[in-house]
Length: 484
Ligand code: ADP
Ligand code: MG
Ligand code: ZN
Image (cartoon, helix red, strand yellow):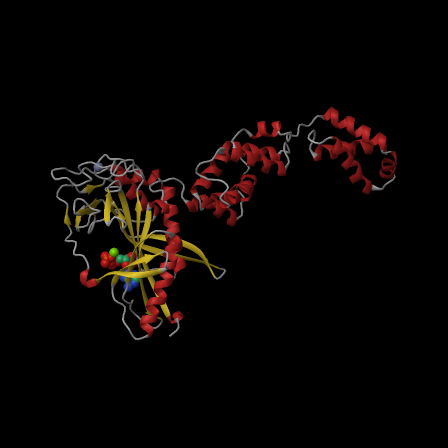
């Protein structure tokens, strides 16, 4: 059978660390990085006799994540112990939620392009639960030892479990991208893939086109980039199709993706699957939420990507451009700031998409660490719009702002790019040009309008930087008309 005779069925478990200041059951810093094992205490390193205390913020962030993904919120949720023995987990159990998770069924609309065709779909969320992250193991093969860093241990994270609703690598990739954006806008996670703050377990099975039930799935653990998610699924579709074509059966197993080889490898099969012996954690209070808390949290959600896109389209910005801005929260927030200083959305978007994003994408500018502010860029765009600087010079001025920083007007002045209209000088120059070009002026007055360009050129040359082309043209026309 051809691969196209099978339908891929994909469900994701997306883990995203929450942006709380401290960890979920102790006061240790939850910030990424830090010298190894300096952000731990008796609670998060699991010493006997310690008691965990819930970080209210973590619960609130999980609820906001739920609202961002259109979930129902469980007003009564219970913490459970997930028992397993592995060195990244000093307590030998992870505090998680099993039967009564914080968020229930939700929905995430996705939009993507496939073969040049625009498509949209709604992916259902089964639930979202809160849990603590584990530590990090560093394997030193040279010395044959493994080292543990417990700084991430106890950092709050949400696990977002989808229904098996995706049918292609592109749908899965888009869903993760969409969820990451929603969580960023909600202000609950930075979703930085490179720092492991968002990662996914990919569940995938194949079913024949005429089948009525899903096939057996493989679960590929901890895939940590959008590209890897895409490649993992592509690879699994091929692997599983080959097995099924030969009349084989898919083993339900956990696999791992090797990004260097672009392949997945078996880690463990169902027979040696963990029995986590979940039970409610007796040390931690159940979470009881009040309606007023839920209402407050929902109201605290800021403007989300859909609303922003609609708002920008309302400003007269083409949909495509609006979506480019919204798809990056840093850029969208920058645009919002710039608008406060110069309320000309179209001009700002042209400059941001055409110049700033272009250079960010080229790697010339680090968007999170810039030497220029939104207010300065707004001022620069306004200067170009009002012809205080030429469009080309505006790009040049921005180049300097990006490299060294500085006020656009000062830079323009220092570099002789500021156009200051000096009407006296304009009239003086025009008179000189008229006086020294008798022949051309005569032709113009006689009805040959083509020579206007020549006269205009003479004036502009003598007036470089002292007037905008518009002013020169108006004044020259007036003078010539008076001669007729
Ligand atoms: P478990 O608890 O064993 O991990 P779940 O039933 O909770 O299993 O499902 C985990 C993930 O696997 C979910 O995202 C779900 O959508 C997905 N999934 C379940 N069955 C299939 C299947 N047959 N093919 C692909 N994905 C599946
Ligand atoms: Mg699972
Ligand atoms: Zn701690």
